[in-house]
Length: 250
Length: 166
View 1: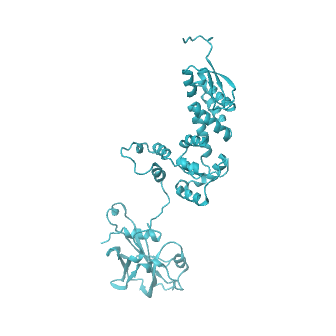
View 2 (view 1 turned 180 degrees about the vertical axis):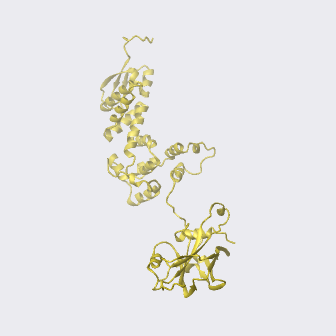
View 3 (view 1 turned 90 degrees about the vertical axis):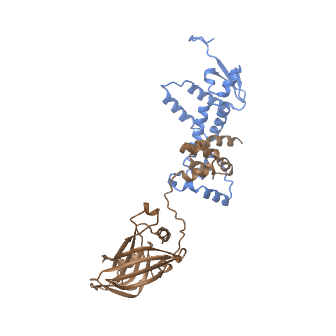
C-alpha cells in the first residue's frame, strides 16, 4: 500500500517519543514503526558508538532507546527486601545512669504509627502526629517523668529475623535539644552503613524524640510517646526499610 | 561538443504525465531527478512518466526549476519557496512524495518527509488520526495495552502535546 512507502520514508525524520506515539495511531502504523531499523537510526544519532559494537546486541535498539533516552526523574522505589515484621527494635533510655525505659519493640508496632494520642498534648504536637509524613511512633505506657535537671540518653539497636543479625541505629546520644513549641526532646546519631555504601553515603541521621505532655510543669517532662524518624533521607515506609537494609548488620 | 557560446540552444526534454500531457523542460534542470537522468543517459528525450499525474508533474517541474537556479545568493529565496511549497493539503503532499520517490529527487523527498514529520511532531494520537484521516482499528483493550507499552514516551513533557488537529 502506498502509505506504507510514505511512512517508511517519514518515520526516520521523527524523534523517539514521536515514533512511539505513531505506534498508537493504528495497527498499520504500529507494525511499521516497530521495525528495529528506525530505532537503530535513533540510537545511532544519540549514541553513535553503540552501533559500532562488535558483538551482536542482546536487546533491541527499541529497548535500548526506551531505557536510556531520558533520565527518569520520578523516583519509583522497588519494594524493599526487608519488612517490618522481620525487625525488632531495642530501645533503652537512661536518666543519668539509671534506666527508665527499656523495651523490645517489634517492627509492626513502630510501623503502625501513632495510636490515638492522649488528651492534653499541645496542638502543634497533635498536628505533627496526625500529619501525613511518614513517622514511626510508639506509646509509652505507663508514662514516665524526667526531671529537667538530669541528662537523658538513649541507645537504639535493631535486630532482623531473616539473617539473625543486628545493627546499631543510635549508639548513645543525649537528648540535648528540647523543642518547647512542639513538646519534643530530640536526640540523634549518624547511621553506619555497610561497605561499600559507607564509602559514598554519610551524614544520614537517625532521630529519636521523646513526646511529652503539655502540663505547664516546667521542671519535668511527662513522656507519653517516642518517635523515631530518618527524615534526612527517608520519608516513606519503603524508603525507611531500604535505608535500614543498608546498615552495617553484624 | 560542448561549446560555451551564449547563443547555444539548451537541450530540452519533454516530460509526459500519466494523462498524456506534455511539458518542455531544460535537461540541465530535469536531471535533478535521478530517474530522468538515467533515461537521458539512455538517449531519451521524451520521458513518459506514467506514475505522475499532470497536476503533480506541474508542481514538480516548478520545484525543479526553482532549485535548478540555485546560487549562493538566492538561498534565502529558495528557503521561502520551500516553506510555501509544503503548505499543501495532505492528499497533495502524498501524491508529491510518491512522485518524488519515483523520480528520485532526493532534496524534494527530504523536504516532503520533513513536512509530514512536522505534522506529526508534538501531536496527540487523536490529532494525528484526524490529520491523516486514519480510523482507529484497535479495540479499547488493545489500545490501552499499546498505550501502556509506550508510556515511557509520554511520561514527561505531556504539556507540549497539541490536541487540536492543527
